[in-house]
Length: 187
Image 1 (cartoon, rainbow, N blue to C red):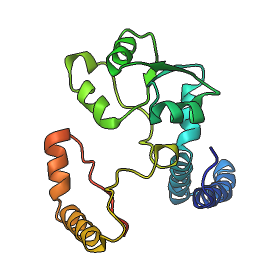
Image 2 (cartoon, helix red, strand yellow):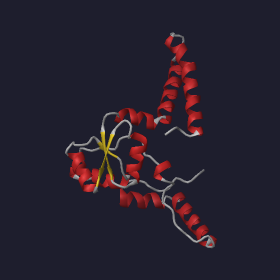
Image 3 (tube, rainbow, N blue to C red):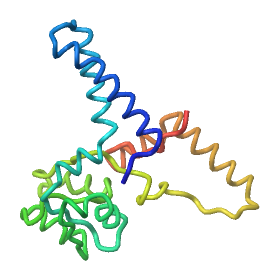
Image 4 (cartoon, rainbow, N blue to C red):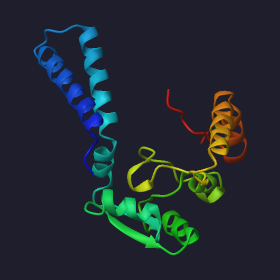
């Protein structure tokens, strides 16, 4: 999946900065400040390429996914050409193969896996790679309302925004899920 125009522009800028800084450093003509800037540029390049980095890490591995899920579609789309993607009929069978080391990793809902990682069986398992969203994953969770219910839609928007800004959704999320899954509002 190619990066968006914005991501590609940010990547191109970071790579140009890296190239500009690398030459004097390699020639011994730069100071600590230039080396720190080079390190920052490297980090920006790495964060702009999380899928490529993940693809590299998963090459030749076996990933498990829940059959007929968004995870299956995403795994096939992003990693199907570099990793074997195995589909499972249940989350329990997926967990069994992971803990039995018959597969190398899984792709799925963060909350489902967080609950598993908090169990004794999940202690040997860790989260790996970036949190994926958008694209095949979809735009997130939505509330369906009739078009003519504009007052209700506005009330939902205001209530959600207020609860996010006040930190109420983050506190509830931490309490019940162990992680903050509250929405990130546009600034």
